[in-house]
Image (cartoon, rainbow, N blue to C red; front, side, top):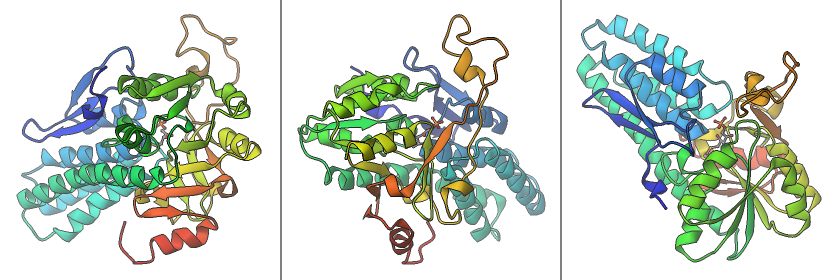
Length: 357
Ligand code: MRU
């Protein structure tokens, strides 16, 4: 067993001006860390899912933006601001669905704006601190989500999860997996079922790996086995993370999540979405307005196989995410507490204090 919870999926080494990324595309066969310095390398790490999961993508992008302007510490203020904007737009174009990416980059821009009258050296220092804050706050947020979610669960429960919303996808602990880690310390003895999560197998490669490594009782199933485990009474609750929650509660998460939600409703099993407030996008009114990333067909036909597993040149459709309708979601658990339907109202109340989140 390895100390997975102490593996940091994204870390800044400011002295060396590099970002250290645990390459999730190589797990579970290889634990390999890359050291990246340029915005192109960091962009590529996001696109190729070396770093993935909504919060981790946001953290990587914030660090990436900081590093991308750090090298321009001798230019004029005007040029520095122009480069910042250019690099921000570039990193924002890496993946379209996880709103944490845009949230983190916007937060970096607000930090720039509020320090605009300072020297470039001072501005860079504030940007560095802001990127570290984004990471550190995510760890605290995940713990809060874990605590709130645990209040909905009982010892010995069977839990189903889809994709990977674990420590790898965040600063630490994960969102949907945080209550499982907290529960383990408190003797809850959960029995976790991890969907393999076709086509990129985040459930098999990442969730099954991190839970297994930490000694949690985890059983890997293929995506099309969710119904049978539910019917057999092995699942008491479904816990998933998410990439974007619209203002009405419609939720985008890894492709196949909505199938699980529909099944959960059929079997009368609560379906919980664990979402940091940074994943709630009040500017997107409903799920239809969430841009869904389309990825290459090879991910379905060849990526995991020695030989192609489909006719060459067959047409493919490979959306990376789907939207679970708000009506299928029993509750959304944020760091600020648990919210229930109607979500348009509960989401509005969650942000009522007017804080900029
Ligand atoms: O394509 P991925 O692996 O980045 O998709 C990740 C997910 O769908 C996760 O469930 C989501 O980002 C939540 S991570 C806490």
